[in-house]
Amino acid sequence: MKINKVLNILESWMPKAISEDFDNVGLIIGNSSQELQSILVTLDSTVDVIEEAIEKNCNLIISYHPIIFEGIKKINEQEDYVQKAVIKAIENKICIYAIHTSMDNHENGISYSLAKILGLNKTSILIPKEKKINNLKIGMGTIGYLSSELSEDKFLKLVKNSIKNSLIRHSRMTGKKISKIAIVAGSGSFAIDECLNNNVDALITSDLKYHNFFMGTNKILLLDIGHFESEKHIKLIIQEYLKKKLPNFTILLSEKNVNPVNYY
Image: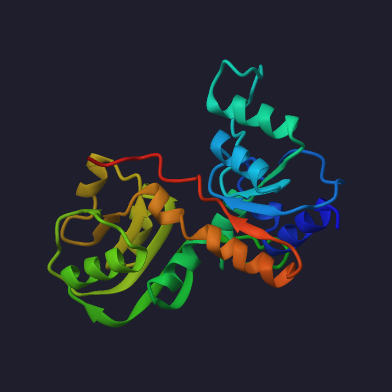
């Protein structure tokens, strides 16, 4: 089977048309007309991941983040990790496909998947876009409800246990019970005002800055679970989907792509 058939499957699931204009989604590197060997699923296409694909005979990498995001004026091995990864992928005839904001904007995408891990019900899009694309409801983030309300302490423990985090940054406790939850996987400070307007009890996201934690004082509990931690589950979601569509092909999860942020 040709690689482009796999890309068509991905496109029908998470269309490029629903991605953000600023993003770089789709086939970024490689010739999709070559025969598929095996697939490696990752969050980031780092040099280590390219080497892992070579070792495991995978000639298609499906990455959540695009390896090329901003313009590149030169490519050489003496520069940053992006250029080194691009060169290694091309030299070894490895295709790299990025799914990024296609999955961010899909109503059953990355934030929805995290909501399901936390056991939320009655989910909907947090910040819907007015227009539909390919008859899909699209937008950023997910709102959902716990099956029964929890104290803030018990809610924080639920989140830590569900996503297997050792720590969570959070705003000052409000003293309220938690029932209505918003989730924005990745960087989500832009959604705080929307959450306040929708009377959300807690927002789960990442990359909150110091001043962001003041924005919800006594009104909403803000959780910063870490960027990697908010997105790490998506590799398994992609793998599970492709296994159903391609039962006769090997689809592996990257073992090399780990959190670049370390804690001491």
